[in-house]
Image (cartoon, rainbow, N blue to C red; front, top):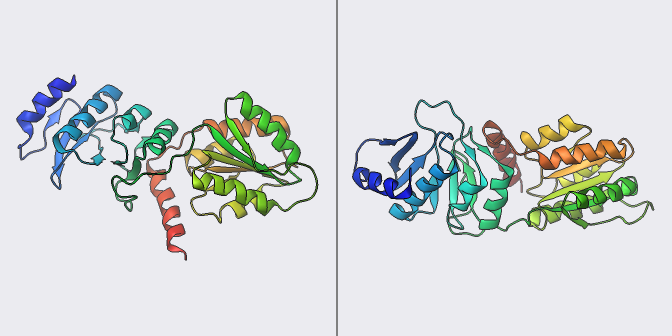
Length: 282
């Protein structure tokens, strides 16, 4: 359905006391804001037209998305959905929504806050979110992970990532918390999209990195843990054990970790609880 037809439909329903349904999209009013939703089967164009219509009629910074009543489909939020939103706005999604990595990247670039319905509100509408440069990976290591770090840097460059190396630059003994902190802070500041830290085992660096607010560091030893840490926990820092992994094993772990999207949905609510714990601590 084209945007012109959406406008004609909206004009006839703007004062409707009931919840009108157009195709598989449902419009309804809440706090004087015209809200919209899709089942996910309409495709990006339908969802984009709905968002444009919502902006025209109300000019609100907050957009709500929800499946039509009775629909079993999950909402998959893509980059094209985010591009339709005004910079600095907020998108509230149902708990079972799936938000792709590309959608999150574009949201960061445009300052759009994505929030799960029922979770605490993020930055106020219009407040710019510091973007994380897409494809920038911060990497660091201590002496136990130096050689593997150097190997992974080559892979990352071949895959098209920009690598920021925080050291160490030799196999001379150093303290892993110093480098884990540097990597974690780069991610937390928004200077890097993701972070990778390599020490001898991978556990100590995860402990250090997780002391930085906003960081979810995961020590991963195989493809399964790498995938789970991203899909379920939205990990933004990966820690590896240089003394326990062969270069090819580490390569596969990193590849899976970088390529796996956060599943969102019920997992988003759990990640929100992690963030809430973090914010509640002094």
